[in-house]
Length: 388
Image 1 (cartoon, rainbow, N blue to C red):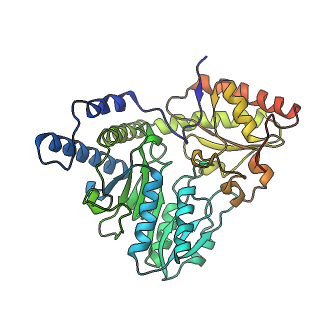
Image 2 (cartoon, helix red, strand yellow; image 1 turned 60 degrees about the vertical axis):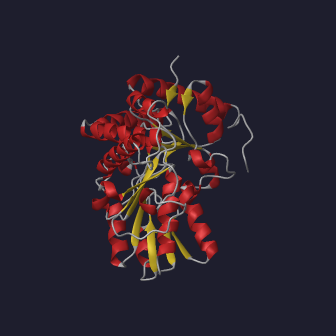
Image 3 (spheres, rainbow, N blue to C red; image 1 turned 180 degrees about the horizontal axis):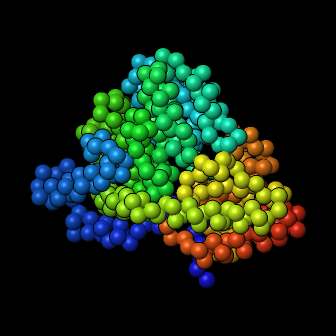
């Protein structure tokens, strides 16, 4: 029986056209873009073509795109790079950011920078009133994500960007969950720095990018060469970057063709079926602010990890939260920040559909998930030990 991947927020299958485009650069077209001979020039042309494609995906200029290896690295370069380049000493982030943002923020705090963590509302959005109250002319950077990776809730970026600009602060957006789900528009958001990662929109693992608006000052995190506008030294991963460029073009085409709307309709159907089919089941986050594909449900009385493993045995792949935090003990910091109790957070599961899902997948999910939850409840809530 077909395995159902309902964990697209963790990663997506590389599109076959992406894989095919990468193949020559893993073999006969090997080359270092920094080399001045013909082979190096060919690799450099491929790199710049991909840069232009990623820029189009974000509504940016090619010269404003810096390639990195991961979304987490892009977040670190944006936040640490901006803070170390600024004369201002305070950083503001939301409490529901990805672990890579929060860990970077805490590391900067340990260095002596001031840090303000703004709370979230129960609907899963950043508290704009608290954000506004936290801002002053000592703030160098505000970082708020586009789409929460655990709940799928879209954040009010235009409002956040306007608040940041009101005090002359830079605005960073972790948009890793956005491409393929909604339009990425750096100007509309008022963003100075935006992070994306290829494997979230059917590109390869190991390729990501940071939009850095012209004249935005950043201190490099990797030194030793003038690669990537002097912001990231080291020979770039040409095959992966070529793949990211193709994935960016495909994501734009899918967006124009209405693919996110199709995925959103599937997701709405699955959510409605699960809410109707599973007693004592509640949605985490504002239902009207979900990006296409993702929602998070609390199944009262069961352990989310047990649900995950039971579904995996049924050939269904879901998650209990961020793939980057799966080994960490304790409940989701995102759900706790939204006011959920530790027990509610432990009982929650993320479902994230994507382009490869169809009506048959939703029908099977709607049948299997209620049965799994009922079976676990009959067994006392869990079939495994969970972290305290």
